[in-house]
Amino acid sequence: MPVTVVNFSPTTDFVDTVYVDTNLIINARNRASTTYKQAASLFGYLISQGTNLFISSLVIDEIWWSTLRILYRNFTGTDLNHYYLKRHPAIIGRYSPLIKKTTTKVLRLPNVQMVGYDPNNVGFINNTLDIFTSEQLAPRDSFHLGLTMACNIQGFATGDGDFDNLTLPGYDLTVYKY
Amino acid sequence: MTSTTYTKDYFISKTFAAGVLLGVATIIPQPIDIQSTKHETVFFIEQSSRYGAIDMDGYKSTMTPFAFAAFKDFIGEDNFEIHPDDFDVFYPDDEV
Image (cartoon, rainbow over all chains, first blue to last red; front, side):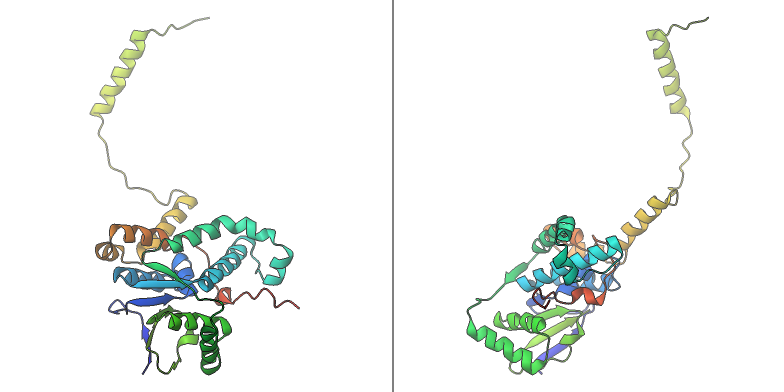
C-alpha cells in the first residue's frame, strides 16, 4: 500500500522528510485552538526526532491569509472575506506586525526548509494535474502534494481529512494526522 | 506656630531603628494570591495553558538547546480561536 495514514501518538516514528501543512502550523501557534495540544505535540515530536521539515510558498501564502482572517475576526468580531479585503486593503497594514512575527518564527523553526519548483517545469505541472484529476483533491491541495512528490518527500503532516484516502500509485507516502 | 528641624543625626537614628525592627521581625510566608485581580488570574491561566498540556520536560531532554528554545518560542504564542474555514484558500481573481 503506497499511502499509509498514521494517527500521531507519542510512539510514532517519523520518516526522515515531512511536508508540513498550514493547519499544523496555525493550530500549534494558537492555544485557543481546539487542536492546539495535538498540533503542538506533533511538532515537538517531529523536531525531537530530527525530522527534516519542508514548507513551500503555498504554505506561507496560506499562513498569511488565514492569520489575517483569524486576527480580523478576533479583533473586530466579524469575518473577513477577500471581497471586503480588496475594497479595504489597509486592513493588511493593521495586522502586518503580527503576520511578520509569525512568518519569522516559522522560518526559524529547527530543520525547516523551503521547497519550490520551476514555474516553467511542464513535467511538474502535468504530474500535479494527474494528482488533481485522479485523487480529486482541491487545486491547492494538489499542488501541496505535487511539491511533496516532486521533492521526494516521504511524509505529510496535516489535520486535513482530504488527505485520508489517497492512492498515489507508485509513490510511498506516510500521512501523519493529528 | 511650631517648626521641626530634621538633622542628619535624626535620619540616621530613624534609619537604624527601622533596620533593627526589620531584622527582628518574624517573616510569615504568605501564599501567592493569583486570584487577586481578574487580569492576573487570566494571565496565569493563559501561561499555564500554553505549556501546561505539553510535555515540555520531555522535549527539553530530547532537543538541542537551540531547537528547544525555538520550539518553546513558537508554540501557543497566540491565543485566537481557529475556524475550519480559516484555511479556505484565497483566490484573488475569483471576484467577477
